[in-house]
Length: 404
Image 1 (cartoon, helix red, strand yellow):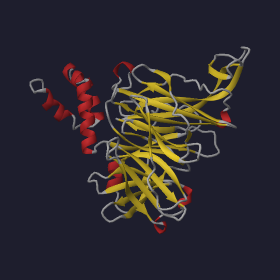
Image 2 (cartoon, rainbow, N blue to C red; image 1 turned 180 degrees about the vertical axis):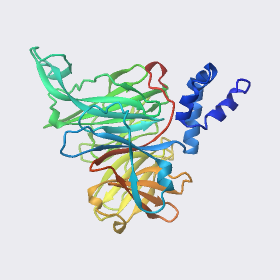
Image 3 (cartoon, rainbow, N blue to C red; image 1 turned 90 degrees about the horizontal axis):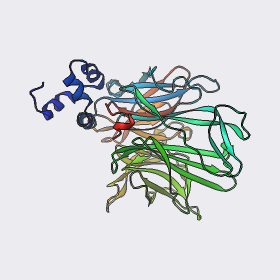
């Protein structure tokens, strides 16, 4: 192995799964150096994306009405493709997830290059500034003059393949007079190609009498948060948004003073905004679900007439950028559609089918025939499904010094 050129060594090793590569690091100092090098990590990542190997579905479950720990589970995508016909999918619980000891729901906000952005919630005693009316950071005791007890997010970047994780520092919500019961938030996670960095974007909306919001950005390179400028004269609507990072930007639906809706794109590198118009939908009455799929921004339009259209934004950021209707589902093909959103999860290896999330079901959609096939029930005891994301295995590090 030592006499082979780097590109040949990389080509051979990049075809192996992460678990095997982690074991191979103990063979020799040379293998340890090769497998841990940034160039090889990027090579292996590129190979996994190209071949669609080493893909897993990561799912968050919780049991309604009970104060129990929520669970994260794994399902190998190859096993779903191998299952013929309808069936029940048995999941494997991930016992080493970094939030396993926390109560409340584990949320999966997004995935990028084998890393997951996940969160949970805990109670904490926070300082309070009566002058600014802003709640501050956690304190160790409550015998100070101004303190409040409230819930805060615990946000973690985690590589489930290497089992390495980093807990993000606490980020203040600096909205004056903000009340927890009126706060809505969402997180976006993606790669900043401009600065070779991984970023988390948090959007918090205070829907009290007067709507207000803030945008904060976390950089893995600096391991710190900062406040970004807001887009003027637009109010974010965070309902129906999940993992909406595509094309190097985070997206959300926004409403202007005339109640016109559009999509706001926040560039992760430049931290600038632009407006993307919604596609022209078939009916006037519909609700939307904004996410990403296959590297594209994806918008699901649920029409009250019963039809569902899934759109993809093609040629993102280019002069000929346009929406393309990707999948259309008729009412008779969709059971109890009012109870959930329909969302694209993953392509099959041959690219001829798309895995759809439909409530507690995973369903293959045949792109050539334009029809649904193979309904699969996601089964895990009596728990309810909260989030599901497709995550590839990678060696990408969450160490601050090695970000990017």
